[in-house]
Image (cartoon, rainbow, N blue to C red):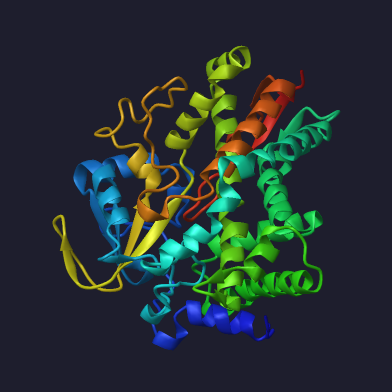
Amino acid sequence: MAVDNRFAQDHWEKRDGESAGIRSEIVTGPVSDWTADFSHMEPEWSADPYPIQDDLRQRCPIAHTDRFGGGWLPTRYEDIAAIAADTEHFSSRSIIMGNFRPPVEIAPIGGSPPITSDPPFHHDARKLLLPAFTKTAVSRLQPATKEFCHSLIDAFEGRDVVDAAADYAQHIPMRVIADMLGFPPQDGPQFREFAKNTLEGINLPREERVTRMSALFYYLLAQVHDHLDNPRDDLTTFLINAELDGRKLEVSHVVGTMTLLLIAGIDTTWSAIGASLWHLARNPGDRRRLVAEPQLLPTAMEEFLRAYAPVTMARLVKEDMHFRGVEMKAGDWILLSYPAANRDPAQFDRADQAIIDRQINRHAAFGLGIHRCLGSHLARMELRVALEAWLERIPEFSLADPSAVAWSTGQVRGPRTLPLRIRRG
């Protein structure tokens, strides 16, 4: 596999739409009317999107914006599910709604297969990864994950207040994914910066965005070089040696998939862990019940995933079309808010409440349609082990300063700062 260091910038520029000349102005600032000017990058959305989504669901279930070059925000479960399942009219070639669109020519592979892939390529690209994320494969990672969680809690010795996001939740998926990909565990701080640049830097000027994203690709190329020189039993070596249709994967496919695993496998899971701890810190009754009834944790986890689903995905309209009362244009963004779907009262009883013993819970936290998260078993394992270790070691905790809790912006929402006052067991 020949790897040219120029590949990093070329690959990102191609993904970002330069060859198609497609870009929009940078748009930030207060939203005047969420029905016609929504933005998922504004602080009020980051702080508490649920009242906004509830209001839109009643008044304008498919909102519109001219920002980011034009896009739509469906808020009803049935609309979100229909779009997620419709690969004929909606493309996944870019899943991050921002101020650049990749060219149509990048489909069906996309920049980070299989999540950015359309049929028919998507099927084989996804199938390639499935063995690494089965329940059996994930179970082998559980002992090391548990040991690591306890080591993080050991480091809290002598502290009354800890940042459960920065000091705990964020470290867990970074270590797990680093081990899976065969990356140095001490590179965790870089992974945090890569995730922030990818998911929260979407409205930066093009030159700055290319520079920041190139740092990620150069890092991944260095890992590819190292694995070519020193093959070992990990997911990176597997991707380098993998074949589709009798041919080795293109470098762009390998690096794109590594990007997916690194970014999607980290921020989504640490956000779910952090949001769950945030809920338990605010709801002492639920906290005490889970401490007393640890067997309830799997059910409670599913409710945390529903009520605080971290992930929103984007699609692009393929051709001008009419969809449920609105006229969509080719190239329009569609922002698929799985958090909004999970709070739809037409789908869930008491949808606005987190009920930790909810029995019927077919939530959409892991997505809908062909792109449903292939790492769901891994995410569930990490969430369960993280909460088990925390509740076992720290049965009593509360928000140290509610006003100090800060949430991420963009399409993955979770606590970035979560100061908790703790009493270790």
